[in-house]
Amino acid sequence: MYENEIYSNSDSGNYTTYQTSGSSAMDGSGTGNAGAGRQGKKKKGAFRKFLLSMGLGITFGAFAGAGFYAVRLGTEKLIPDQVQEAVSEAGQKNGNTSGAQMSNISQVTYVSDDVSAVVEKVMPAMVSIVNNQTRTTSFFGYEFTENRPGAGSGIIVAENDTELLIVSNNHVVANSDSLEVTFIDGSTAAANVKGLDSEMDLAVISVPLESLSGETRKAISIATLGDSDSLKLGTPVIAIGNALGYGQSVTNGIISALNREVTNEDGTKGTYIQTNAAINGGNSGGALLTITGEVIGINSGKIQGTGVEGMGYAIPISSASPIIAELMERKTRTDVVEEEEKGYIGISPQEVTGQIAQMYGMPEGVFVHEVVEGSAADTSGIRKGDIIVKLDGQRITSYAELQDVLQYYKVGETIVVTVERLENGEYVPLDIEITLGSRPQE
Image (cartoon, rainbow, N blue to C red; front, top):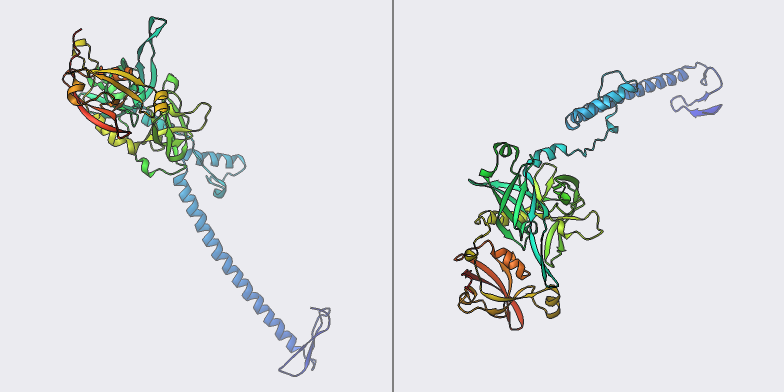
């Protein structure tokens, strides 16, 4: 207000002068009653404002207190005890001796990278695999034999009355002279091929239960298979495997991509889970896990490019499970030792290498140059010019691979041979059942 401001009084028709510099206000009659009445009204208004402010303050305080109590109660359930204790200790060091564990809950953030509990839970279901291979090469007319062991990983997925069943990659166990499995307690055992699927790069091998000690039986466990169809980008994952053959190791990361189509080293294509968890040579056949310990992928280290970092791949378990179930039902295969008992197809072969296949537009495999008259191939319907690409579900790219697969089959056994046959200028796949015969005497 400014000095000597004049207000109109409608009741009395007189003027009232309000003097801000003076000690009193006088009306036109000199009584001063009007000024006193206005001051009374001001005091009542100020009191009402005070009561309103007090009410709002109490209400806000009640809601705020309830909110902080709810946050603290929820945090005590969500944040581990050791984190709460650490925050409490920090508060005491800063002079907070009230005993409260959380002095300012809104400023506490907890992110755990500790996966040790999950690893401890699932590691008994992981195994290391050594594939012992002997190869003979010719050099200037001389033959040289060398032992070339390969390292890989496996996951214990089931047990029947006589066998422990382990899933791995086909390329980890294929073309082996012998397979050796190492369990979590350091014990080893010989394994046999149960079933192979080269197209999905899956294999199931078995270990006779009678070859395992009681201590090993107690130490190992069976993995839990999850659901890879429900995965989302950014989901945390853990990879376990026999990296570089040094023994089991653990890496972690996230799901980087789903349904990623990748061309493998052998030219085939597959659909994979992509992760930034490190997957190196030897990790193949190992497990890609959720943070709850469920297997959602089978690592495949063979498709990593040179110099590529942060791009590992795994076969989705939801796609692999039906094939694994079928492979587990197959007959366990062991090498046929006696030469006269080994199965014989009866063809004169010629290899179709990748270079030839690309040059002439032919499928890669074993070209049937001649069919031996009266042989198993002849009676089953295999023709000259056919290209053998699979035998009992396993991909065949060379005659050496064909011989490696045949070493598990005896005379008289019936298997399915997949050939590509040229019809009307195009190669058409055909599945032909063939009952293996005996190699003719020279």
